[in-house]
Length: 398
Image 1 (cartoon, rainbow, N blue to C red):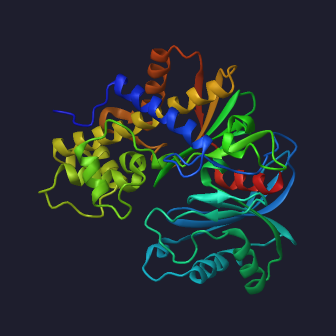
Image 2: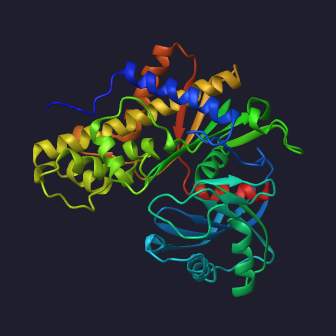
């Protein structure tokens, strides 16, 4: 069966090299395709101790917990809530805070707790540890919040409307929390945080002097955590079906890489491949997994196409990681061992079709591409349960 989603290693290297060059541009100036947003927090590599209240606002749910970090890391009182109501028309900033407050009041909160807030939307880090929303993604569009701080108004609302007493807040992207959590695995030359779930993104550390756009920033030096916002990458070698999915999306022209690989969009690519089959408009990555895991219940052509889209997603992720490893190799020529802390249900999925794990496709492709580049580096991919919560606590306790 013809595979219109097949990519050769040569095409994947084009993609890797294109991303590498766009990351370099993003480190030089603002407003570029790959935003390269600095985060003004130095996570302690060791010796972090304390207790924090942690919030995690994702694409579909909101979680809160109390996290103790020290010799042992402990998460207590984890509560969560489906928050897809955020995507409904007319949902307001106050509605969001009320929704979050309902969850927070279920926790046994420490007195004067600092808050680590994992916020999974594009935001510009502020020097005080807060962040300013750039724009909503993932189908959310709450009016009046873009361009304003995310953390401070939430703290004010909570202190007024709950029995908690909160002081300091650190707002960090989910990819940054994965990056920070990865530091719990010592012994690597470089670290990458990676998300491949509803959406996709990467983050890493660069030396501040490697980031021209922040060189005149007073009071900041050393390594800088950088949230790439790599979901907005517009790579070469996408298909006419990807163009169609983008044309029919609510953010046309943006997040093209995310639209080619993430869980929110894989079903849309599949539907575009079978435009006359009357497929369910709600078909998503979970629906494709169902086909691949129950091949006997579906047309062979459906199962194979679902697998081709899944496989391409993993190979594109591998190419993006190799692009970033090349940037790290330029910033730190001694880089040999790179740790990737990966989060997301799609990334850690496995399917019966071809008896495949997503991570195995990523690993195999990375090895092939690094060999072709003759780059002497190894990439190890790992996971930590509740990485977002642990990384968010580390951000506010550092």
